[in-house]
Image (tube, helix red, strand yellow):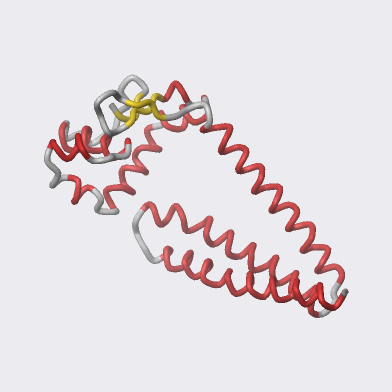
Length: 188
């Protein structure tokens, strides 16, 4: 039974070790791009890829070559990673759970009021630097090229995200270089 469990752990870690290589490759591929969105994702992808690589390597060496300290390291790091993932999930629910969308009578889109969200998220959204980064990201993705061809009827009938409505209003109607918030609302 001991040999079987070590074999299973060895194969699982070999698969995760091999899976970490495309993750690291994606992070390195994003390093050659100049868009803000991809630079934002590059560091976390590289970090996650190398952590998976190191943890898998420790588990593989420990299971296949009977190295006890590598298995103990693998165990503690995996417990830490599972706990961190659970904490991150709970944090995400706590920050976003009070907020939400409100139906607008007669419209397809929903309205989002900042007062329904946690103070931490409200503070982050009201930061002008946050919107400069998002604006650069969206403009760099060429999403606006398709939105500019829409007619007013399209805006009433399509299921728009709040950011699409917000960008249309401030970039194309008001020809604004900044993205101010109106009464704490993201989309109206």
